[in-house]
Image 1 (cartoon, rainbow, N blue to C red):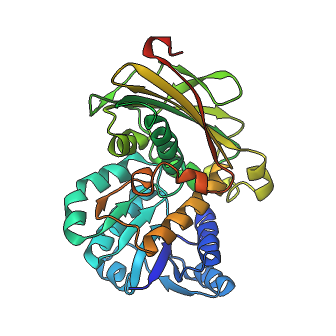
Image 2 (cartoon, rainbow, N blue to C red):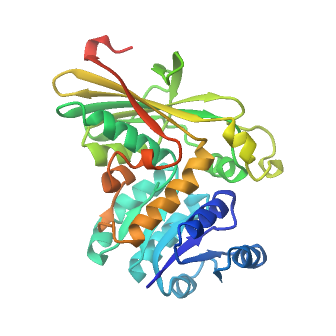
Length: 336
């Protein structure tokens, strides 16, 4: 078992992840269900391709032959995470993906015991906002004695890819959730919170992000709430099939992402920090390829893991031009 397989390699993010993995010198296989674009990509990269759908167990098992690590870039993950996670467990393959949907992380929780028994790691969110926010929250949490509450927001800007828009449309939920005393509960979607991303305070609206699961696991904080501030044309309207594949490199370069966090410890002290990085569509394939490289060289633990929990809170700052800055600390009652 010697290869890194990138499933969904012909998608917008999958192509970039495959190119980055190739640049890192990893022995990759590109895979997916559509043969013609897959063969073209394989020829461009000088690697082998495997064509298989996810409907039949036997096809998945044959496709995973001689694969050590699987990076799933095929969204919507509502349709691909379950068969590929279970296939990874059957075949002793470490599983990574770039999912931003809560259900993929709930599935990893469900399969935790099976993964432990199989000696397989499940690492959803190896790139993207989960890696960003996990590193940011972990950094801030290290400055309090015992993290009890995490309030974190992501600033999303620029255009969305067609695949992300389709995934978002298929995973829409009317439930806005938070983690309270270790339990996921519904929360008031109209309760905004102000965050400073380094350019002044702006209102952010609550959303249900997978970080409600991952931050709890990586920091132990029993109370987690997640927010988003949107600027530009991040959420498209109209027929999604008419959208371009994704933002151009020029568009990505013009739209950096930021995140902001407030972590409160058991003693009431709150610490705030911000993260500034490249566009999310540039960060995600870079982070996913780097995570795969680390796992290929042996940085893996059986069971459901998170990027920050596995690699440490410094992981995001190893990706491109990413910086985490401590803003201040203050008594909890002084929070904005």
